[in-house]
Length: 338
Ligand SMILES: Cc1cc2nc3c(=O)[nH]c(=O)nc-3n(C[C@H](O)[C@H](O)[C@H](O)COP(=O)(O)O)c2cc1C
Image (cartoon, rainbow, N blue to C red):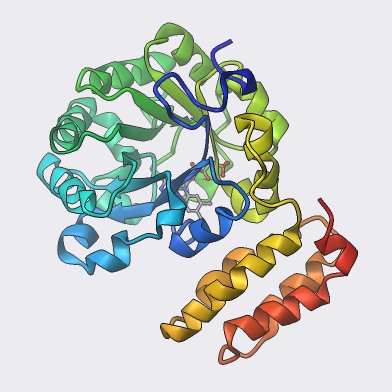
């Protein structure tokens, strides 16, 4: 047994045992602010931010976040040691808790940039990048990867990749437990079609017990999280955290032994009114937050009316009004359910 609730929700190195995955357009700062009203302990990942955006773009736009979001890990997409290290240096001013290199994204655009999952073919290059990252920060440096890519699909090749990168000093790896097929599948297909291989990730933890090994892919309930923690150090949840965020309302209590951040969905909604005001005041469209709230009542009576109310309003309506209308569309007893 390497993990589990009896160890207090953190690994020996202090890493939260549960995290929410980096997801483009989904895990932006607005979503992270929202989910913090459901769980204070879970480690949150940013969307992938490319080195080009960090070095040449509007830094505050890509890197600023609310202190409430801690602990938060920045995921970087890049392919040269210099650019990635420079990006970490810049991001250090914002106070991230961890830096993560994306070695798992299979999109064509990312492949053109020669980063993401295609880096799995060049472990030496990844090790060069992670060594450079470690030189510019004292924060943990981690890698999010696949089991492999087409042509490099075996457990042994994954082990070689991990060993090479670990030699640069990286101690944290999260493995999306399937390969990425770079030729011919879209990113979405690459999250469903290649078969899940949890056993390979468990084996990696058994054979490299000194490393912190995390698992990701198709994990959808707190019971699933618990059962994986019997085999690996950490569990990363992606789509389920977005589609059914209420899932995370029990995590602080069940895994970290802490008070829950909220006991009812009503409390979460109430806490977001000032945020809607902040968006209005700063001239940001309410949709930035509203879109992330669609799943809050997933699976409960009233879920449909909630979604309709959030989706249906004129874009010009103030955020507070949209949220109030949606709240009132859900029966009181459902809002108060714990
Ligand atoms: C909309 C969306 C965007 C994603 N963007 C990223 C990303 O920016 N970086 C990354 O490493 N993975 C990204 N992923 C993959 C997820 O991090 C995760 O590995 C994948 O969804 C499998 O986990 P799940 O089955 O729990 O969803 C994305 C997934 C989704 C659904």
